[in-house]
Structures are given as structure tokens and as C-alpha cells.
Image (cartoon, rainbow, N blue to C red; front, top):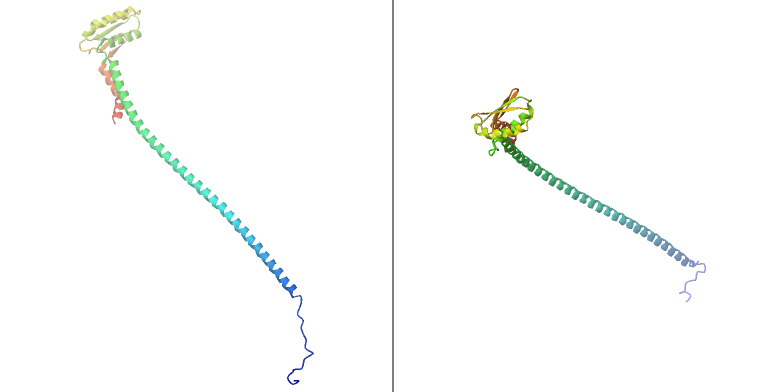
Length: 226
């Protein structure tokens, strides 16, 4: 039996297990909490940064949308203004064309009216009383010549009697003592006359007067026809 047992080594050193191991384990848990706290702080910072970026992106998006809307509104306004200007220009051009047409028509009407007036003044419109033109001319001469002069009046024979009656009426109001002699002349058209006195004379020629007025109005008539 002594041969089967190994001698006990009383000199063997036993290492006692450190009882402060839990304290060391507890330190490791505190370190883990610090790391978690740092991670949470970093996460919160990242979340805050993302929130700020999102807010900045929203602000930028709003500004871009507002600017886009403003640009669109300006473009629409400019297009509307250009359209209005084009419409106004077209209206002005139409008015200018109508004005030229109306002016041409008015000019022609005025010229024709002037010729009609020339006919009336010259005696062509006095078919009912052709002696009126001559009588009026005699009245104008009476107002111009001096006292004591004599007026010779050459008229168509058919007007002698009617003119004599009109002259008698004028002489009743004439205080210049001017004699008026009527001379029948078949070469003078009815309504025309030739008046002469010592210091001058005047010819009443309806055709010549009408021709002169027509010549003056001819450019207007030609322009309106063109």
C-alpha cells in the first residue's frame, strides 16, 4: 500500500483566488455604461444634425419653390404685357388705316362741297333768280366807289328788266348819287355781268370762277381718289 501512494508535497504553493474580482467586473460594467452614454450622445448629435439639415433643406426648398413661382408669375406677366402691347399696336395700326381712309373720304367730300359752293357763289345755283349774283355784285361796287361816279353794267338782255327793279331798290338807299346804266349784251351769260366805272371794273364770270376753284381743289380730289 505504501508503494501505491505518492508522497505529498508539503512545499507546494497554492495561489489564492483574488476575491476583488467582482470589483474588477463591476468596473468593466461602468466602462460599458460610459461607452453607451457616449454612443447615445453621438447619436443625439447626429439626429440633431440631421434635423438641422432637414430644416435647412425645407427652407431651401421653400425658397426655390417661391422663386420658381415668382419667376413663373413674372413670365406670365411679361407675356400678358407683350400680348397687350401687340393688341394695342394692332389696334393703332387699324385706326391709322381707318384714319387714312376716313381722311381721304372727308377730303373728297369737302372738295365736292367746295365745288358745289363755288357753283352757288358763281351763279350756277341761282337758276331761280340769276339776276341775284349781278345785283349783289352791284351792291358791293356801290360800297367801294366814290360819290358821283357812274357804273356801266353789261348783262344778258333777259335780265335787264329784273335787274332794273333791283337797282331801283338799291338806289333808294344810295346817298352817293351814283348813276347805274344797264347795257344789254347777248354775249354775256345769264347770271354773269361786266361792271365798269371811271377808276376800275369787275367781271362776274361763273365759269371762270368755278374753273379757278376747281383748279385749287384738284390736288385734294386727286389725292382722295388715289
